[in-house]
Amino acid sequence: MGILTGLEPEKVFYYFEEITKIPHGSRDTKRISDYLVGFAKEHNLKYIQDELNNVIIFKDASKGYENADSVIIQGHMDMVCEKEDDCDIDFSKDPLRLEVNDGIISAKGTTLGGDDGIAVAYALAILDDDTILHPALEVVITVDEEIGMLGAADLDTTPLKSKMMINIDSEDEGILLASCAGGMTATVHVPVKKEAIKGTKATLVVDGLAGGHSGVEINKGRANANKLVGRVLYGLSKEFSFNLVSVNGGLKDNAIPRASKAELVFAPNTDLEAVKACLADFDAAFKHEYKTTDAKVKVSLTAVSEDEVTAFDTDSTSRVITGLMNLPLGIQSMSFDIEGLVQTSLNLGILETTETEVAFSYSVRSSVESEKQDLYLQLESLAKLLGGCVTSMGEYPAWEYKEDSKLRSIMVESFKRQYGHDPEIQAIHAGLECGLFAGKIEGLDAVSFGPDMKDVHTPNESMDVASVKRTWDYLVDVLASLK
Image (cartoon, rainbow, N blue to C red; front, side, top):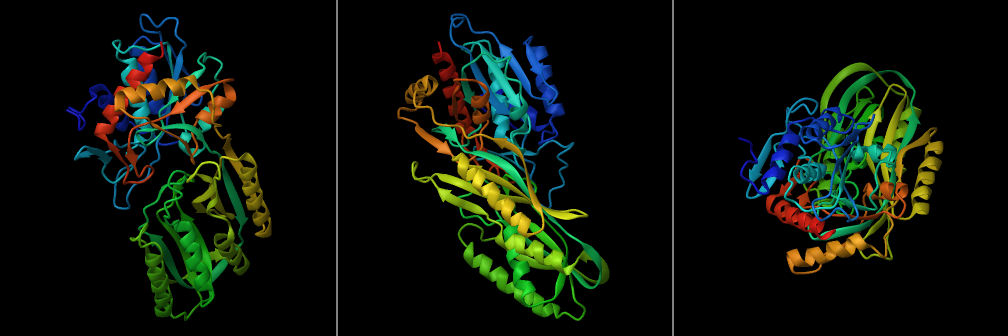
């Protein structure tokens, strides 16, 4: 018996739990993709599995719906794999440890993968139930959405005949999304030179942060651990002599990093008690600055030892710290058209040291294409001053609002029947695959929605059982209305 057995809708939670047993982090999607293919074969459904592991499953229309326009049901199969420091789960082989408390589903010590496992579960439950009324279905489950929508970007859409698409990749029940930001991953490469240096080696750590989704939660005032490490390093450099050995923080460019660390080698005879006192001041300052949004922030110094190590030379140390202090971060502009909407932002999600460089990986987002490009050029110009360069990948277009949307009108009317009031129609400052599909399928009419989920992309991620049920009933009614 599964952890979710007995929850309604039964098939949705059955398939969701099955998904959580299969490793499916970004770039590790072969097994979950093969599971979807196995499902299609077992149910005698036509399918396509491409070289990237994207899967399309087709189902004929219900009786009486043969002449209705077909519809795409779309989501992604990969999840963000984040865990608490003391969690021993290996995302490459272990199932998630599901918990249900007071009607809320979570995973012990890790992300839940409700983003976007719930879309896959909804889709499979629909495909598995011949009593649900619907037009012809084209279920599209993509890979690597969380690292730049790579699956959708390279998906061959020519087999798709639908001009309507229901995207299930949103986290707020009662909100229908009709527009989203475009974006890219931009990486600033700062080259470093190294040399043997004697001194006192230590590790500076900033952790305890809440993290979160770097798009929809960029406006919540949460701290970025990589940025805080940069602030501490610059502050230390004004009082103490040291060289950097490495700086590393964050796991995903589209997740606000919860922890970051820098290995340092202080000059011989450095007063470490004075260093610790300086760090205590930063710790107190950060706790005050983020008392409402990130009160658990912590600055510490660990692993102190006398040693000769290979470290950055003085110039490289200075350039990396300068980059951390001065490269842009966070909200850059707000929309004047939609109240409260972040228009342009960037998140330093990954800081990584290699043998030859420090790489600063950003998720860049904007609903205005020219601002997105301008922000990239800003990174490019600063990278040149730091002796480096910038590269980009996974660029995707904004999803523009469609004034005349048949699908949205149908979904609004269905919502009013189900809930007794109008839904909210919103734009979102996050990347949705709708923009990529709209760019490939001329005249595509798309809407995105989903059940209530909180703290996605963090180990605190949770999903509301009752909301999943209501949203399922709503989806079923929408499909029946597409006659």
